[in-house]
Length: 96
Image (cartoon, rainbow, N blue to C red; front, top):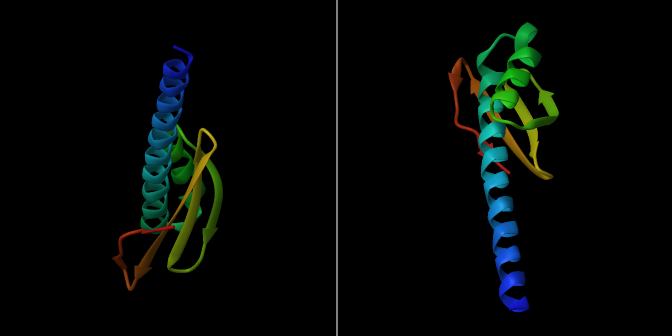
């Protein structure tokens, strides 16, 4: 009985971590793309809004001329995404 309880607890814990990982990666991807698509003067506001809508926490943002790197946390699970824009053409995010 104890073994079944421990197995169930472990399964629930693992499932919650997987869901948090998916949610944080989705938020990181969306915020990185949003960062590349908007003007530099409103980037922080847009990123905060995107991250809040995904129930995540913005950990770090690195903004370069044509590149944006965002790190997002959901329930102690951090994910990072990189989005680039080359000559006005937006490229998909690179997950790390």
